[in-house]
Image (cartoon, rainbow, N blue to C red; front, side, top):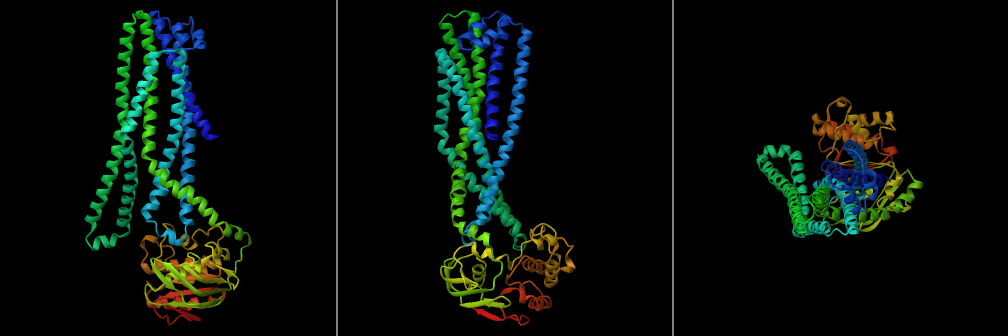
Length: 539
């Protein structure tokens, strides 16, 4: 409804603009005694011809002022609705893409580079908005063009019709010449955009390495190279899109010369000739932005075609695939079983990163701490992904409560929140409390929060700036976050790697005090002497 209103108003403003310009014809005619009445009647505009007949110059001035005032009021209203539509499309598209990417299983999600995700979610979503409005704008420009052509077609004015077809032919030739070039520029725009984001992320995330390895100039030059390529690509597109303005302007001059020359050959009266020239000038003046906008819109469609192709693959096709795959999980959500009493692994194997990983068989029950140990790269972290449901086994069975076999990604989510602490803790640019709660502010549990920061030993730096924390302090926030956001299951993946010996021992001792309410998996490449574990899963 909003879309129809916006572009309906836009179309109405074009009609008012055309009528307003036609009103100049009798105004000018009244100044030199031209026969504007006959000219407008010949254009099948008798209603306008009868209305202006015998009116004074000041009447025409009032009418022109009112028409253009109304036109711009409608244009402003149309722009307001158009911006609302663009905002809605952008928010829904970018949020929809983000939801799709976060719905992906971990194995597929890891295949995407961060730069690619940022490009799709922000840049390409914004370009999709431009493309959507451009397509609709082109349709209305084309409809208006048909409206103008139909007036002169029924009138039978061959000279004006020839002018229409001449300018239309130029538009078609221009598109034919630059079609492949614009498509290539559109593909390069996405490519250079991804590269630019990739280098920028490397510079921001590898500050210490860049400084210590003396590679700042290398990365800065790399950024300069891709920034130059990206902007040059945009400039080339802008240059090609600017060409039609000059081409159409020259074409209009050629049409006017052609029109005057033909009129002289037909020995038309000078007053009638002036009337027709004023009419022709008004028509061409209105045609210029129509053709120019149409040309620019078609150019934009060619440039953003690659964007449309990729978003189709990652938005529409994937969206329906994701909905289909998660249907089982959504049905199960209605009967959430919050408590995890037992997890069994039997003959579990998984192919991950071109590697076949075999998981040792084990049974883990609530109230136990399971120590998972082994060398780097043996599959300890992969086990954590399988336990948490982030990955599915290629072979074998994972059973929950000796009843549910994990076959769907969403199944284990129906057993409540799973606490997870990785080796590298990413902190939000918020307060430490917000980092621990991690979006759980609405249902704040003070007792659970106090318990979490006590076990993780965060109390001494709770009011510190997150950007000024040490690696060990960040890891302790990650530990508190995992404990606070867990229900029955917690997975710690090398949680003491950045902690000093004393802090690590205190944490392990305190962890023993909460195991009666939890099932805890503790992943480590070393034997933790202070941890009172119940079982070992050894790789």
